[in-house]
Length: 154
Image (cartoon, rainbow, N blue to C red; front, side, top):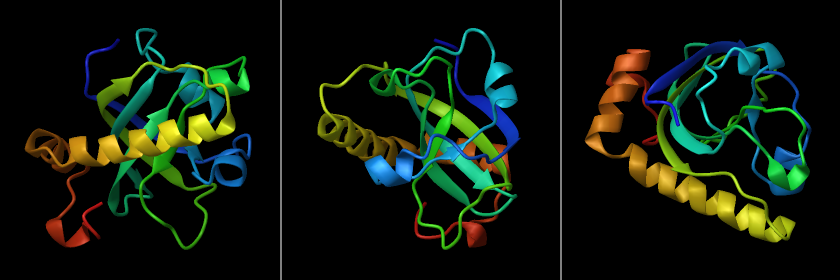
């Protein structure tokens, strides 16, 4: 696993597989293949947490999934669940992501319900971890966001 933090900076949000919102109820912002292909070779697959900003806007907590064995994906992807409810989709917008911590390795699940439950657990753990002062400081360092731009503690 690569030393963290890692700034996977700036890629346009593209359409993914359409599973995050529809099948899982957990929408994701997806980086295009060329951004994923340019990740350092030593970025291992797994569930990570960190910070994200869409178009230099507010910074929100994230859980980022870079592989999907349940769906038997043939290619690595970087699907970022932003822990915030947006009024509009962000397709075509520029996404910046700072990965600051690792939660667990990827694994397969026997059912969609078990996968959803695991992701919900990952989201709750990410929220807790990102409230640690050292990670809050990284958010400020990466994104230079004034306190007035932070909304709803996300």
